[in-house]
Amino acid sequence: MTLKKFTMIDEPFICEVCGEKVSPLGYTARDHCPKCLCSKHVDINPGDRQANCDGVLTPIAIENFKKTYKIVYKCEKCGMIKRNVMASDDNMDLIIKVMSNPIKLD
Image (cartoon, rainbow, N blue to C red):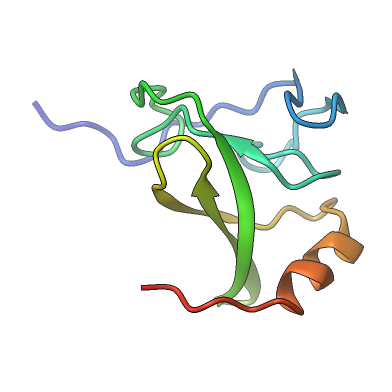
């Protein structure tokens, strides 16, 4: 059986890190908090909810991606590195702060 690589889930949630009430994006799947940029390790492929980790994904770097950027995350529980496309309403001050402290990714 082949799993889909992307399942569209754009729903509201409350951020478990900062408590922000997060609204759907409306143009693609919301996968992180726009205020603190944190996410939750629940997916193997975007939207599949197949990961059993449930750890907090903390932003550690920003990478160029096409005409935008991807936020690079490290799971605080299992150490997995994940990448999510930056959203239009993300906290730019925090994006710049993460960009100003670059790390070497393996």
